[in-house]
Image: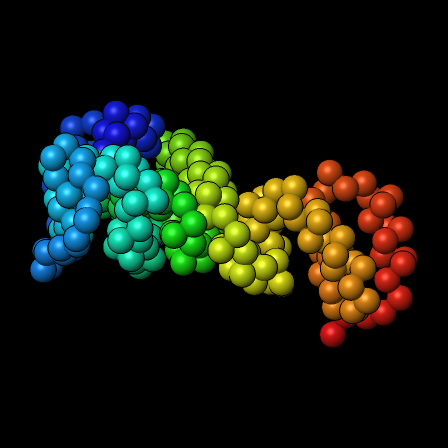
Length: 260
């Protein structure tokens, strides 16, 4: 994997490169080896088939896992068989980093886990539409709270929290691009989020859909159904400041009913 990037993150949160790299070995043992996967008519990367690289990822083989993710990205849509394994990485339970409580070793372990999932999401994006079943787990992972600060942090803990918040924001931005790569088959998962009462979930879906959400909102407003119109208004609210407050006020006045 891109260890230079990991080193940057480790130094940014004050772990130091040596301690971070040492903990890669322990984190690589998160999953026990399972039976090998074998497929027919497989693409090859560096002389080895797709099934080999999926097994490397499944076994968390530290020495080759970076190359395995590279192989998946190289295969693109031809690596559709890797989707279940990549999705499992993203959807696995995660204990948030607790600043001021977790030791540097534990933080390093969790940072490795974060990066492993980020690599899996990048690989899913390269697969495209065939990876659309992973849309909801990927979005749920993006919305998860992964860092919990101290209630009364020291200056060092505050700086570490700032570095991790920056990293968290980068993860969310990359998820927007990844789910966008899943294409039309990911729409049902996005529509489900648009209907959520949680503004953060709606906003994530709005960012993923981009300009396409405008046509969807217009169709909802014109559908003749009260609930559809109110959903459209919530979506347009989430687009502020791109939708003028004056327009939003006028549209609310045109909706002459209460949502259920």
